[in-house]
Image (cartoon, rainbow, N blue to C red):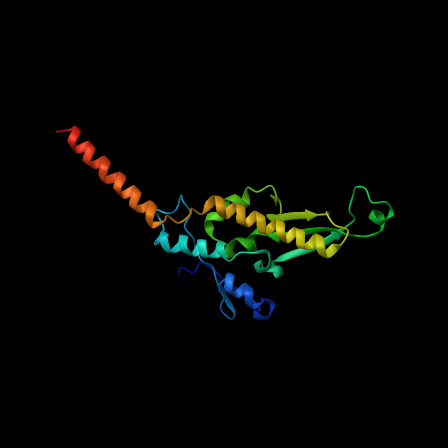
Amino acid sequence: MRVHSMVLLRPRLLPNHVNNIFPLSRTLFPTRSFASRRAASSADDPDEDLAAARTWLASLNPRTIPRHLCEVSFSRSGGPGGQHVNKVNSKATLKVSLDSLLPLIPRAIHSQLQSSRYVAQRTNTLVIQSEESRKQAANVETCFDKLHQLLRSSANEAIPGETSQNQRQKVQKLYVFIMYRSQNLHV
């Protein structure tokens, strides 16, 4: 595992389920490099990196996203609703700095996240808003669900699926057949 940078964190800020998804030591956080499709040929061990990225994706859910990285603010919601809209700050805005999020996720996902519609280019942050509910807590959870969906869809695009043993055998048989045919055609 290559270590690119070290960031000091207070361990009490991180719940146990986050430590299972985002590998942390007690006080130091090692940043892990992941292979993407483009960088797979230049990586040290692309199979290991892709396996780690697949493991990360399999264990990702809205509850495992580290909440201490996010800044939540509230404002007045627009649209219909009568006087309630004018009195209550129920619209939730979730801001996540890409500088703090990108070291926690596989490198293969970085380009998809940086080109996402949620990115504010000037501040290099993801800005996700929700005003679907009249309750602040429900809107905050909706924001985290949207962030989870963004991470999952980006990962599904960038991280190739694992090839089954059956598919490998089919490809190998096809390769042998093509090699046999090409040798017989040149004779």
